[in-house]
Amino acid sequence: MSYDWAKLPADRVDEAARSLLGWRLNAGGVTVRLTEVEAYSGLGKDPASHAHRGMTNRNEVMFGPAGFLYVYQIYGMYLCANIVCGEPGVAAAVLLRAGEVVDGLDVARGRRTVRKDLDLASGPAKIMQVLALTKAANGTSVIDGTGPLTLTRPLEPPQEISAGPRVGVTSAHDVPWRFWITGDPTVSAYRRHVPGKTRKTPAPGR
DNA sequence: ATCGAGATCACA
DNA sequence: GTGATCTCGATA
Image (cartoon, rainbow, N blue to C red; front, top):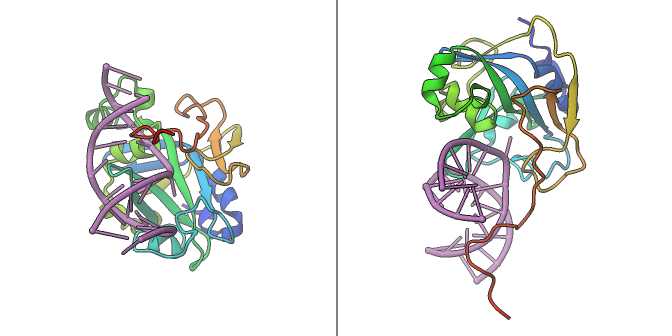
C-alpha cells in the first residue's frame, strides 16, 4: 500500500483530502468507504483549525508526522477523527466526515440506532461509532498496522469530486475545503451555519 | 472560577 | 427546535 497523501506537504492538504475519498476504513470488524472529508490547514491563518491558536493537550497529535489519528470529543458526547497530514511541526489534518458501510453491516447496525443503512456512517461522529473507535485511537498510526484503524486504497478512484465550504465552521466560509464524492447518498446536504442563532434564555428586555 | 461556543446527533 | 455536558479561550 502506498500512502501518497501522507507524503504531501502541509500546503497541499486539500489534495491529500481529495485523494483520501473512496478509501476504505477498516476497524472493529466494519469497513467504511470514505465519501466526504474536510481539509484543515496548519499553516498561517486557518481560523477554523483546532490548531489555529497553537498546541494544546487536545491537539498535540496534529503537530506530529502524517498518518496518525487526531481524535477529539465534540459537544461533550461525540468523537470525530482526523488523519494528520503534512510535515511534522505543521498541524494540517483531514477530517473524516462521512462514509458508506460496505462490510460488517450487521455489526454496524448493532452499534447504531438508525432507520436507514445509508445513515450508518453519514456523519463524522457516526463513523466513529460504527468503527467502534474511542479516544484510545488518538495518536495511533493508520499506516504501520499498529493502530485500531487501517486504510485500504480503492481499486478505482472516485469518478467525480465536488467541493464546497466546510460544515459547522463559522469562519473561513470562502474556503471550499469540504470535498465529497459527487452524488453519493451518504453525503449530507449542506447546512449553512447560522452563528448565534440558538440561545437558552431570552435576551434581557429593553 | 465561570461563561460561551463549538468540525454533532437523534428525536419531536 | 432541543438536550447531552467535554474542551478551550476569554474574562475576572
